[in-house]
Length: 296
Image (tube, rainbow, N blue to C red; front, side, top):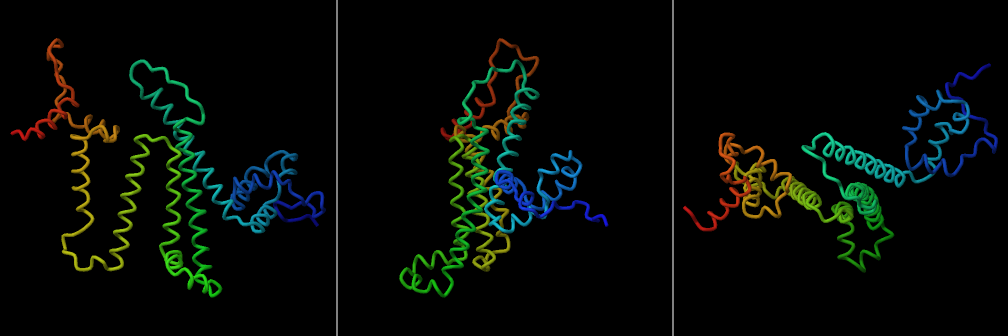
């Protein structure tokens, strides 16, 4: 009687049941067992017989993933995917900005080595942050559970401060935040400063929400809320734009200048070209100088 299984597995002889170690590790660190099953159903089964013979069945890949610690492999898979997606997206964005959105003649770009490429280092930094965050969070979580066990009683008595810190509920989150140092892989550019400021603001927001849930701001007035951060943050940004433009994000500054034609008047078409007309940056610098001189 013929087998009713749509994807029959090969015989269990030693020669056919053994999977090549290189192929096994390549599958383990690039695709999960569930994804391989879907890929096997839609692609491998419709491929030539030589490829179907080399590809292991989904049941064997699932057994291999269960036999080993698949959490580290999952962290590596996620980091590799972030690296590939971010690198591809940055290359496409460079192509769009240099070929499609460029105005006038394109300038010749200076060639840089692969190791010094900003796109490569940004992709590497993002993938390392994700990978180290997963590794550190799992490590400190397991360390906390081990220190809370009865066998770790002597260590807790000998080192009460260290044990109190490592057994805290915030220990895994604080330990995982060490992955943020991987941002140093990216060059010291404006983007790195922007990412650091954004992450700091998000961390402050999470800290405020955590304290609010624990009742630290229970007796606050009715008008107190997170909306107060918006005018303060906007005022600080505009103050930096006027007085400290050298440390202001250039992309945001260009956005402000390009969307304020009513405040920063452009040169009229009927204005004689021989007469000078102030640039938008000159007008902003004049406003800052007027404020320093306390005028009017």
